[in-house]
Image 1 (tube, rainbow, N blue to C red):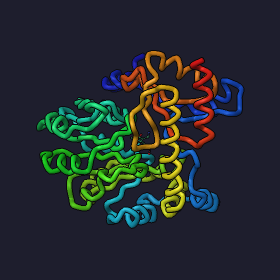
Image 2: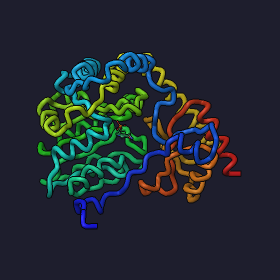
Image 3: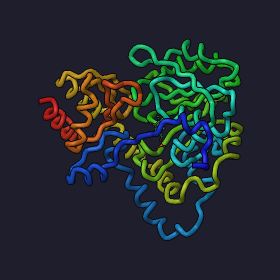
Length: 363
Ligand code: PMP
C-alpha cells in the first residue's frame, strides 16, 4: 500500500481486447467458435510468411536486427519511400505509445476524433496530457473545419484514423490535403492507416504522398490486418527521417523480434495473398450488408474489414447471447455507442455461423 504508481494511472481506462477463441472454447466446452471481434484476416497469413518463420527457427538464439534493415528496405521499396523513412515497431500499438513518449509533455494537447481507436487517448493519458475530442459529423464523416477549430498553440499531435475504427468511414483525399495545408507547422499529424489496404474508394488517400512531399505527417500501418500477422506484432511508421530520428531515440533496441521481422518481410512480397484478402473482404462486406438488411438492422457503410451495426437497445444482451453460442463480436459500449456492435468481415462460413446464431437469439 505504500508503493504508489504515477497519479495519471488512476485516470487510465483499461483496454479490453476481443475475447480470444480459446477462452470461449474453454468456458463453453465447445470446439467451434467464430471470432469476428478483432478485425483479423479470416484466411490467415501468406504461406510465404509461415515458411520464412519456420526456416528461421534454428537461429533464434541470436538477437534480432535492432535496425530491422531488411524489413525496412522491403517496406520502403513497396511504398516508394526511402528506407530511413521507415520505422518498424512491435505492432502499431507500440508506435502510438512511442509517439506519445517522444513528443508529449505536460501542458500539450492531443486532438483525436470521436469515436475512434482508444490507444490514442491511452498514449496521451500515459504522458499526463489532455485530449481534445472532435466528434465526427453525420454518418461519422470527418469535418476539416471542426478539426482545425480544435487546434491551439498547445496542440502537439492530431490523429486521423482512416478508415476509422470503429466506424469504417474515411477522410477524403481532398479533405486530408486541405487539412495539411491549413494546419500550423507545430502540429504533427498521425495518419493511422491500419485498414488502408481495404479501401475501394477512388477519393481515398493513404497519406503516403504527403510524406513523400515532406509534410509533417507520420503514416502508421500494420501487418496485423490485411497481412494476417496479428500474433507476431509488427507495425510501422512512414515519415521524414528527422521525425523518425526522434522516435528512434526512445525505442527499445530489440522491439521487433527476429521471427516477426522475417515473417513480415516475406508477407509483404506476396501480392497475390494481399489481393485475395481484399477480394474476400469486399465480397464478404457486401454479403454481410445483405444479411443485416434482411434482418432489418441499420449499419454504417464501411471501407474497412469491419462494420458498425446498430442492434438497438438490446445490443449488449444480443452480444452476450451470441457469445454464449460461440460467436464473438465487439460490443461498442466503450465507444459510447451502447446500441451498437462492431462485426469483423469473415469467411462465408463465419458469416453463416453469425447469421444463424443471430436468428436464434432474435426468435
Ligand atoms: N490502429 C488501429 C486503428 C487499429 O484498429 C489497430 C488494431 N486494433 C491498431 C492500430 C494496432 O494494430 P497492431 O498493434 O496490431 O499493429
